[in-house]
Amino acid sequence: MQLTPLSVEAFRLALKSKGLKATTQRVAVHQAMMALGHACADQVSEWIEDKTNASVSTASVYNILSQMALLGIYSHRYSPDSKMYFDVNTGNHVHLYDAESGTFTDLDDPELVAMVENHIIHKRYRGYKTEGVEIKIIARPTQRKK
Ligand SMILES: [Zn+2]
Image 1 (tube, rainbow, N blue to C red):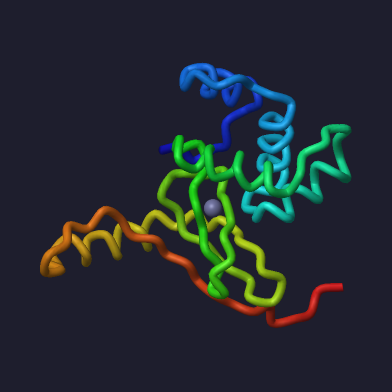
Image 2 (tube, rainbow, N blue to C red; image 1 turned 60 degrees about the horizontal axis):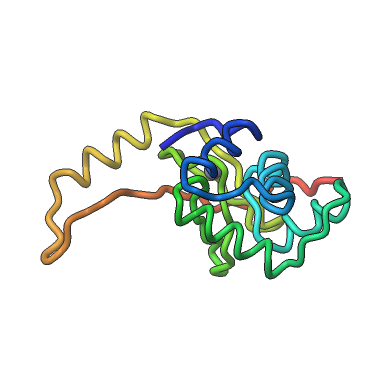
């Protein structure tokens, strides 16, 4: 669990510790994720195409993102229309989801997280053991951005 994204150097070390090579493609995906924060494979692909000389297909980008999520380097996030996003922050934090642009923003609100967790801790869900809570506030901008 971490709240700040891994630097490229820390990312290389994290891969090495899992027995993986820091390939040009993996590093390009991580650079895109650091710049974007939350992104789906298409957005990461576009960023790499625009900003780097690396050539990575969207399918490879998706595979790398999924692999990093399995390793706990990124987290999965789902938009309300069930599109899969990835998040460089794996710690417990609140999201504000902009339903108009389809973008996630991190909210630093430990009080809200603690409030919900304290409520959940006293609940029993028959046949289940809770593992965590994700809070996503879905909103639309009050004014159109230029
Ligand atoms: Zn986030």
